[in-house]
Image 1 (cartoon, rainbow, N blue to C red):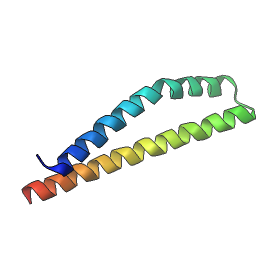
Image 2: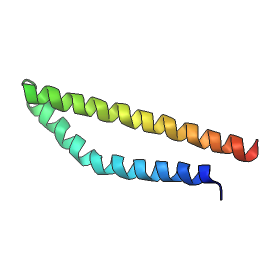
Image 3: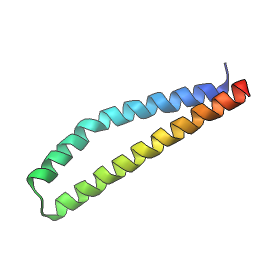
Length: 76
């Protein structure tokens, strides 16, 4: 098989495992923020949730690019 295919599959699987393992922690941070709207600790938790969303979006976009690149190299 193609090396690019293995890199794509590995990137998607490892990213999915990392995101699902972090999901519970983000849910607890969100519950803490909704319960305690003010405070320094809430702002740091908001920043970590925002970075989690940004990194999840970047992972998804990069996964799509890798899949498109593999299809382009394999069938093109």
